[in-house]
Amino acid sequence: MTSPQIPIAKEGYPFIAFSAFVTLIIAVLGYDLLALPALAITTFVICFFRDPERIGPISEDALISPADGKVILIEKIIDDQYLLGQVYKVSIFMNVFNVHVNRIPVSGTVEKILYTPGKFYSADSDRGAMHNEHCATILRSTSGHRLAFVQVAGLIARRIVCWLEMDDQVRRGQRFGLIRFGSRVDLYIPTQTQLEITVGQKVRAGETVLGYLS
Picture: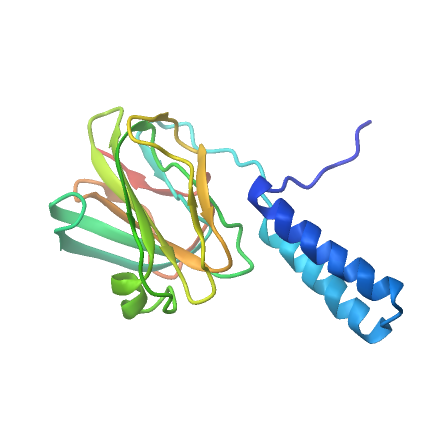
């Protein structure tokens, strides 16, 4: 019987190795009062970069959450940045204890990747939504719907990772990137979508159904 393993995102390896090395040096030098906090930090870094397997819904019309966290906003807006029309905007806030690997919400083709440098305000604030560094992916689903999902950096998050490229064929639930140390993901989806979530609800990337594309 094989022993269980903790799946870790490869982007976390350098951080884990550095933290573990510092902890080891502190322990070897005999700084007992510092060794325990250092071990706690190493454990936190390992947990932060965990990347568990997820099982998604069966329905092809289901739109799944791209991020772990809490729904902090659902509103109908006029989007003049990505889809250029009336859409639902759904915002999911990830704190430092959530899984930070992001997943594709619906199968389709990547039309465009838009990276914008910016500030690092708190990700759950209005200033953060408007001015923070972000990376937007515009996708056309296999059923012909266009949607956008935007990785937004936060107060602590200083690095957005997106592995997608234009014209990529992607499948729902596929890992597409992560944001390091606290952040948010905004979705811009068609107003015909039958939403199945509420503000304040906790969601899981690759599993929680946000709605159904009609």
